[in-house]
Length: 494
Image 1 (spheres, rainbow, N blue to C red):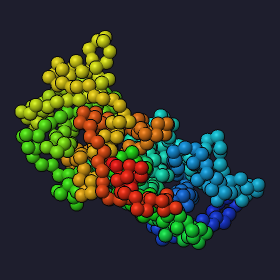
Image 2 (cartoon, rainbow, N blue to C red; image 1 turned 90 degrees about the horizontal axis):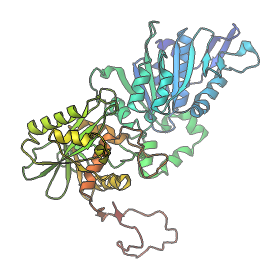
Image 3 (cartoon, one colour; image 1 turned 30 degrees about the horizontal axis):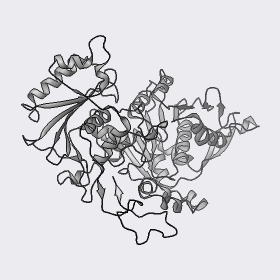
């Protein structure tokens, strides 16, 4: 798409008004990061990282520039809800383009509230769409557009992103582009980080098709001038939130359900301050377990675990019944699932010849009528104990095991070959209706079978000796009190 027209219009220019005459449109002046975003012609561009980087301004100007430079182009701006769209994009764009001006000759474009779209005299359109859940993807069926702006992309799942980018099609000759704005956190944190921050690609994904333009409050001169105290408010946030919002640090999982989960390749060998580690041969004396969560239309998940002499769990192998589309099951019948489990346990060097004890969701035993999934497993020689399905205490066990001690050691590790665990665990976020639970609409199958595993070998929360400063003692009443006084929490129970 033309970058020359983008640069020319970035300040001001004459455009055809809705009434047919020439009208001056002043788009303002971008900061250097915004200018880089406006110039980019890469297929998939992510912009942002930190709060206050001028993301909404950049999205609106880029969309308008594309609409003016390419007559007939169709553009979609998507957010999670319509109220967010209205406040962040529809109202500002209507004002910028003078959609409601009493003089039709001064209007640069028109807004149709029923269709939720802005139309330009040259035949270009900006469509406004929302996607709060997977059910909302039905609204995209049959829709085609040339450019997709996914605002606050980390609020969307990878499946939603893939579905919406599939609408980038047509035979009109326009290049197809997706533009994302993002901050750390949210259910889409993992896939955004993989594609744009870590640049880990799979299948047909081409590294040349992705670019991440980092921007933060320090890049936004307009905001710094209008509200110089904003950066101080970000600096005053708690440490994790400050790193995410001020620094745009995608290694922080602030707000995620498993915010302690850490994948640090620099510690794969020493097992310190990371949960993901390099595979090693399992000593023959260690016990091996299997955990299972049933799925058909949604993925099934099997995890194999080894336990060392200190009770530390290692996820050494997994089988995840998912297509290339996240959270879409391969639709294997139970007979095929357990036949494959049996084959892997018979042939894989980690498992061959070992006695393996299994645990699974108690729901697979079903009721007294008919043959249950557990019965099918038993016929294949794959046996399970009924798992404890206490969700809240089960999540607590996962938290206890993921907690690091003073030396950075955890009670749960994951081999770096267990890609489903590494991908989906960071995507878990809290339920909006049950605060101590995670959102069950997400791809939680690995998390569920890991929970069953941890509940079979429950541990107590460990005590760290490192003090965490308390910020709620204005009268200094705790001075001189013992660190292990049960009346106060100067030490941390994890």
